[in-house]
Image (cartoon, rainbow, N blue to C red; front, side, top):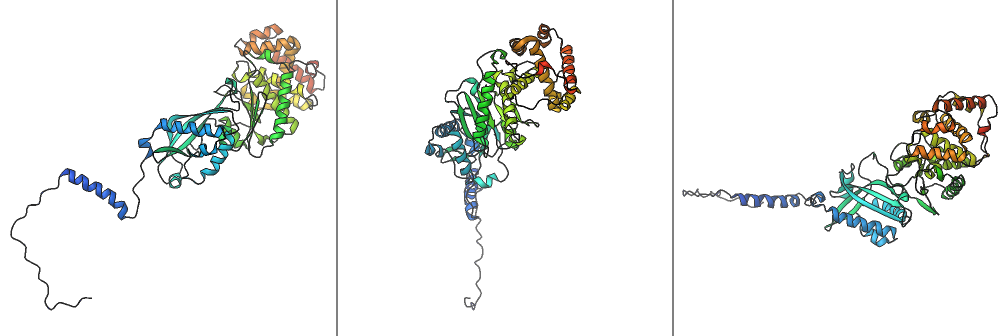
Length: 435
């Protein structure tokens, strides 16, 4: 502490002369505010806020980056693939590895950015360390290098972008809606094994026995080809076969774009042109049961029934008939099963097929076998094709000498015979053709 002064310091008296202080100009005020805005973060020990990429978002540049990224993966160019990625999120590295391995197995992939945006999921801004742009995109893909229209599939994906060094870089795939309402490509969701046998494509998910599903698919394709169903298709060549077997029900639902509603497999009409089969492995069927089910679904593909106007009971009955014929050692219909089916009425509709599938599908099968007995295999397939084009089913049934009500009554009688243990000639297997 300095020594105390013997005499206290006396301040100088104020000047008597008035001093005029000019008011600060507006430009000076703005300059001062800008200076404070720059200095304040530094004084507080913080970096200035990052630039919001949405303000200078260049969609065309992002699309070009996305095109390069996809092309590099399909070509197996890892360096080119990595050049379009941000490393801001360390957790994205494993996802990128998975996507590269999946894309490398595909023949053709196109991903087109849309204009729809979404918010980052909670906590993601802290992980990325700066603002980001989340954009929806449409992915169109095929396992074939030069796909036909019926080999192309489509799905929705969400991409997270950062602007780094003035250019957009892909920084993640986990943002977007928490519950997406559109189908997502299987290869976007988990590691997949892609196999292509002739015109057939098979994608199996993580932990799924790819070899077993290849054998089942080959057997089902052969069984459907042997049934000679082309006359049942309204037009065009046989659609390509695309079978997807995800690892879980949750993944299967996202691939489908909706709930499987307890179904072990379903064939859908993809907006890009294909008729993919999506399998739910949680059904946990035996090997023969899976082959039966896959044969059933591939009948729908071969006849293009998901896009047809044929009544459901007709196309489901045809699929059941071919699948049963392909496995003659399948357990016969029991009296109890026949009795359950006889409790339903009419020709099964969507509601019955969903609510009581076992009994309803059995009624469909009986109806188709009775029709084939009247019309012959060729006449049955013609009935399917004509109704697929929009011809009224009642009108086409007249050729068999039945109305819909009379056919339903005949089904009821056949089921009553089966329930009572009586033989029904029309339902014996081994007649060839479509069933």
